[in-house]
Length: 575
Image (cartoon, rainbow, N blue to C red; front, side, top):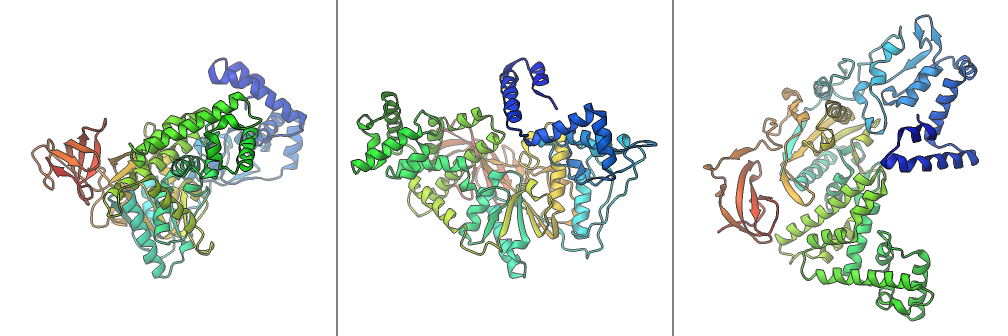
């Protein structure tokens, strides 16, 4: 609700000071074009009704009844608009206002929604009559009792208890898997069992907290030939930032990959424009060369300035350096080196794009995928891991995506994108502290309460069955670390949940028991000297028991930070 002048007056330093004149120029150009953006539609409407009583009275006379749906998601300008349009009554505003909303489903604080609008509605619209809509026609009583128990811990809400006349239904299921791949494999097996029992694939949805989590499910479902659709966003390997990094890796492996070469040649921007690129193509065609061959002799390209020739030569040298590094580095190490050297993450950070944090997270997820591939290949009989091998596996994932009818697929989506939808069967995955609830919310009560509302929304999308899952370990930012189970799991009523043979525990996702210095686990104990085929020699710092066997925290001599190693899968040997 700040115009250019007010914004400039309140932002005298830093980013705000730089933006203020741009904002003013932007609004001037909108006026010249007789145009408004979406924010203007709210801001200008509020300004007219607020500053011009005749206009406000005119529209109040026209609006006989004012109905607002999803009221818990209103932002401040929308709330002001409702108050300005509401007719005055004998006891205050709102004699002609009816709003529908659920404070327990307010999950858009990050885009401006303010839950206080619905919480304080009766104070602002005095004399309002509140009608509680507690009967639920979607979910089973079992699912609703679980959802009620969790959301009842929030303080910013109107107390209510959802109930249903449906049959009791199956208990909510919780399982802690070894890692994110085991979690995805278990979900895939459940999908096969459910379809064998009569459910359609379109009846099933898999929810996760962040878009980057879709990657493991996409890979697993593709390899298992389970048709799926990623809802609300493009598939992981189709995202711009993922395709950019993959293009660099492809052109390192195959210099003749012209598509990847042209995608990377000016990303991040290095002053190689479309005109230079067109002349590069023309020179290649004229002399029967491939574009990568022309790069090696950029000085021979006609019509290109000396500065542009120098940039082309520098790019060629960069790619040559990367190719030389393939002799010294494994796939994961090389990929991280490439991303760092080209400054890709730094470019995303400079964009000031609201999606930049998510794009950076996707780049990290891709690097984690290469690390996971490398470890799996090292433990298999398929030969040593290679960058070419990883790229070939990625190509298969993309191609299988459309092999079956688009009308019968498992839906993959974030919990936010599930709002307003419903499915007979719902999987809510990645229920670990720092993931769901998200790490950005852990340091504030309002943040935790919004995450709890998001979990409540996810639970109540289900009609018949809910499967909850977490992972004992998860790879994030190149490290495989032990995970702590989400607090929301402990908030579920124990008698409504099938704990898959074990009780819940905040200690970890897998009910771990830490081994002390005088307790051994599968032959390993703190202080042991060990060797790993990839990381070399190291010392065991800590041993943790999980349902899938011991996990050791090991400080390897080749690494700056300790690594978490599962003894069941890693080939550790004592020294």
